[in-house]
Image 1: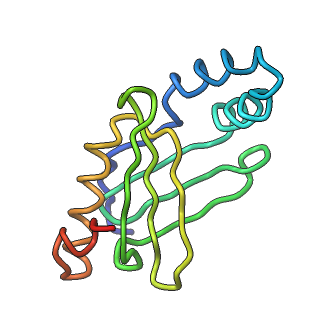
Image 2: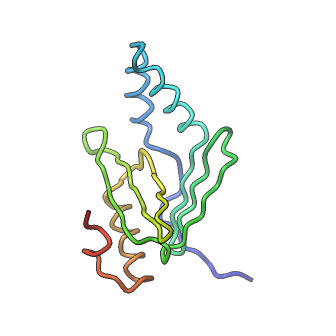
Amino acid sequence: MGIKEETFYEGGPHPGDLVINILLGFTIVGLPLTVGAIARALWLRYRITDRRISVTGGWKGIDRSDIIYSEVIKMAKIPRGLGMWGDIVLTLKDKSRLEMRAIPKFRETYDYMANRVADKTGRSLEAITKF
């Protein structure tokens, strides 16, 4: 019997990301953005719990990344879609980065994750979230 995880968020990217990028697709320049948004809408899924962050994505959703909070050394958030959704970037101990695109309620999600990182690493929120 494993330890029970409490799920904070489970789902895909914000639907507004798809809508905006489809509208941009009516221009030739926006086509690559539209294709990316469609792929995200179809196959990208996030699961954020009190123990880990899981991101499933890639072509047909076959790639999966699981990150535990103690591996995160820095976090950043970028608002998108007039602030209705946003991107969160996690920098890990090995200097690799995990970009989480079009997160719904990204401010609340960012705060939740930052608090978990602070709890697991013993570092202050300011040290984790400053650029």
